[in-house]
Length: 508
Image 1 (cartoon, rainbow, N blue to C red):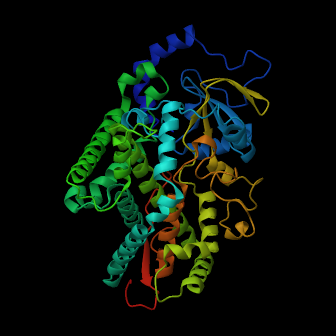
Image 2 (spheres, rainbow, N blue to C red; image 1 turned 180 degrees about the vertical axis):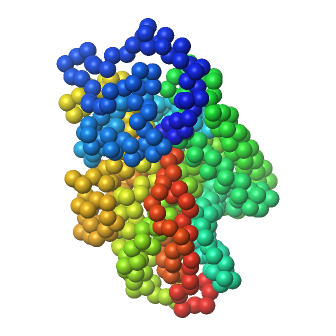
Image 3 (cartoon, one colour; image 1 turned 90 degrees about the horizontal axis):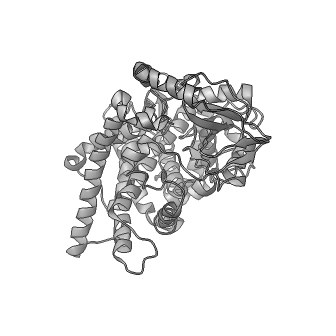
């Protein structure tokens, strides 16, 4: 997903024109397979840049429009990279289930190389033995349902602190104009307490400001156009300076992660550890002679990077979506509040144990994921060998994007697809855990996100608290404009005014 800033193409065009013409003349790539089957249909590529000019600043929308013309399986050429886009549940199932093994690889990207320890994290690492080991480490040791549930008290404490912060501002007549900031701080504190056993002081994190800005930079840079991703031999040009910015963001994070691990090592040496957090679990495995998985310091930092980048910004963008739709649809807000009032009452705040009884809240979240998926194209896949899909031939080293944003708005799949209708999930078995290809929020197959329980727990709890504790009125325009990157946040942060609605005078 590295094409956001197309101006980089214009900037570098004079520098690479002669080289590209030479490559085009001497090594022109054929768009047809030599066998009986051909590539899927798609727009004719331009010389030199292929179909890159068709993507625009919101590629998920541009690709959805193209799919209406060329079909649910479509071929493109992004500069020199053969690319397939799947835009229907059937095609997503073909790639992510039937041919899951062939498309389990990840393509190289500058963002993964410079910011994710040369692709040594779980999300971006190439498919193979290393990925299997780090995936096993995360699924068996770190992100299990049992471990997620063990941190429920942390989530409850942090969401209560967030509610109190919003209440104090509203009680003083101050406007809570941006929900993204308190939600981001809430998820940052939860994740820090899970892997570090504590939150961090203002001096350590600059009040969280610089850390959240670093996370914003990482998520933005994951969505920019980087020439070297498509023409590796020209990576050294670093047009737009994006690789330098990636390295700068990585340096800030790396220093934080090193200090965190050093702190844990020293605490363990002094035997001052009071509880077992995720870094302690990783250090136990690194120090154990019996551990089946070898854990290095770089792996520790890469895993923490996954949790931060996948948790903080994704949760913030995810909660903004339903809050926007609830403000646009007050009858849905009223019904969600009524359900919580019946199950919980209005004399206390929602606890995590209450969430299992809040069925309508789950419908709200599912419908939000359908219309506003946090990752509209999923993380790209890459084929390791040629195969036949949907009557077409897909060659090896082909990049795959699954446009879940388009799937969620497909009129042939969803009735009144552009409307926010929570009742469509009443009596439906469809969920977001990777088994239903109509709703692939967290992906599917081998590369499905292993942090689904933790992600959903965060989203359900913070959303339940916000709508149970407060009545909300919109401030400003409730538009749906989005900003493309690794996630899909609102272009302008959501502004709303809260008023306390519980019978208690203040948060408990």
